[in-house]
Image 1 (cartoon, rainbow, N blue to C red):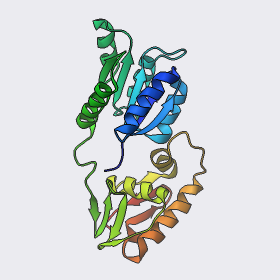
Image 2 (image 1 turned 90 degrees about the vertical axis):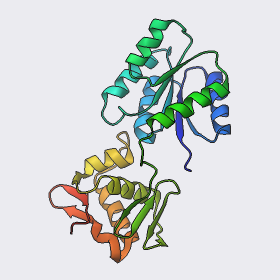
Image 3 (image 1 turned 90 degrees about the horizontal axis):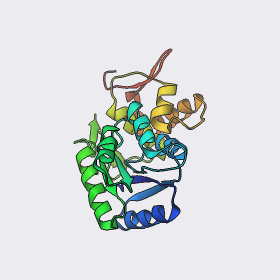
Length: 229
């Protein structure tokens, strides 16, 4: 199974390190940020599966960042666990009202943290997200990150793979180049819209004659993935 990515946001390096070690031992991929601003940019660019967020940080607090992420459409579904030194009931309620999925009070054991994290990911992973997607003999397996056509493996770069995964899970809708940049590259990446055309061309080439027609050009708009000719 593909390793889940967790972003740890805490201004104290020793705490981040302790959490990172525990998560890496439990086979999670780890990203780190020491303030809310950096964390927000990393969420947009790297699209982690879960956020471990310290409540008290200099500048923008964890709770403010949680509220902001829950307001934005692209990050509203991101699971958040708040790390807090405060055990008082009203603070916990405030955290959950801000959109956090769980909270854990410092000090905590790494084992407890990993157990809580697994529980939140289990609850928040939509059913079917890890199921293979198939269209006309073209199969994308999100767990192994493999694409095959009529049982034969296809070679493609990571950007083409992400583009195809987005298309296959959002069929029959036209997307502009800027929408594709936001969804596939991440909103904080400064890439020219024409870059999308380059990767679409590469994707079609990788799909070969049998399936390249599925990636359609929509004049005046952008692109659409459709089996409807």
